[in-house]
Length: 309
Image (cartoon, rainbow, N blue to C red):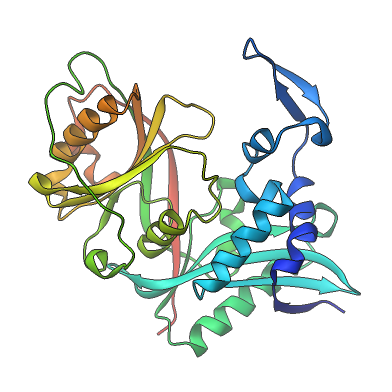
């Protein structure tokens, strides 16, 4: 019989195996930049991490689980006869749009156990826990292939639609100066009522906590955060895993009228840091405000939600 229990750092090896089974082919990077088929055992930890972050390396995953639990967040595993079948990770905190929110950040089920109700059992465990602890909403940003699954789990409301947006930094973009007040917020309170308008890959609280604790992200990635006083905006610029010259932008912005100014500031600062492009996401409601920028609009993702009270 399948049972659900809280995960512990001792589960890192078994959880990592579940994630690694999803990789169809491991590849190694040659000195000339080309990729050749390889074995997991022959890859460096850095190469393994590039396939999916901490979940690809048991030692890194153990550190991730320790930090996640120390921060008071949730992780559960599904187990049958001592064998782990799946894992779910959840970030719980305030959100400007959804109130106190439990956000599903990771759900993975063993390849040979999928479509047997394991994932639904894990989601239901989280829903019950969220209700018991007074959460107002349950949310998730699913991969496109998982949208139908979450809709069947009653996460039907489209909270937001985000479009990928990539901005190359040419001679014109990134010119000028910007005042950056570097800091490292150890409390979410200053951002609690400030919307995350750029780089909303998860809930606002989850995005802040993951960046503060480097949860799931390798610590070797370059990372800077702070305030742009001219725009009243808190920002993060983090090196993209597989493109070292690309910065991922996340920004908590007072309102959409500041988006152009924030992207100008981001372009200047990113160029100063040696990047040649920025990638982020933008709410589809505000794409029109970016007309005229030489950026590329990419795929759409949705933030799905379920109101709990």
